[in-house]
Length: 207
Image (cartoon, helix red, strand yellow):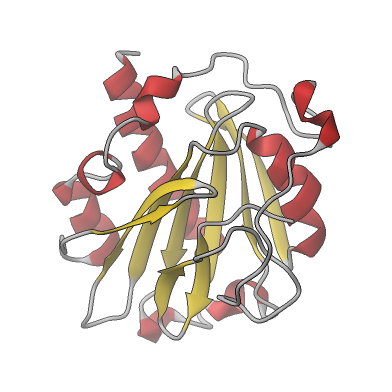
């Protein structure tokens, strides 16, 4: 099963209460992830190796305070709303920010409870994805943009999973403002959000 903090629910990003994805409707509860027997040998399932990993400590803080700064939220959403934090006991911590006027939403999730990194995303999310795009490097870290929404990027939602080590990932998701849904490609824009998050994580790590 795929590891995803976020699912499209109406016009906003909702944090999935139970982890994972399936062929069911977005936001539906599914079974928690089962560790892969191959997880001891990372990476696997075609996932790239993270050559210069960040320490796990960069994910120790509150994503609402550290993942994106107010000026970055202004660039993404047009304003800097208060973040809404959600803790998922099966995955880790997440935060989403919503522009109530336009419907544009950004979310960031720190996957700290499952330790198989991008390997799980490649193994479980890729087969279910209607859109899957690999990025060899976002500031030196491999990543993949994906959505399981059947309409693909026309649905206005995309998530980028970034491997900050072979065992840890960060997810950055974007829902386009209502006026852009069906007109712009969310998976072209979401990597910009991921780049901002990586900038902040690297700064925290001092690299």
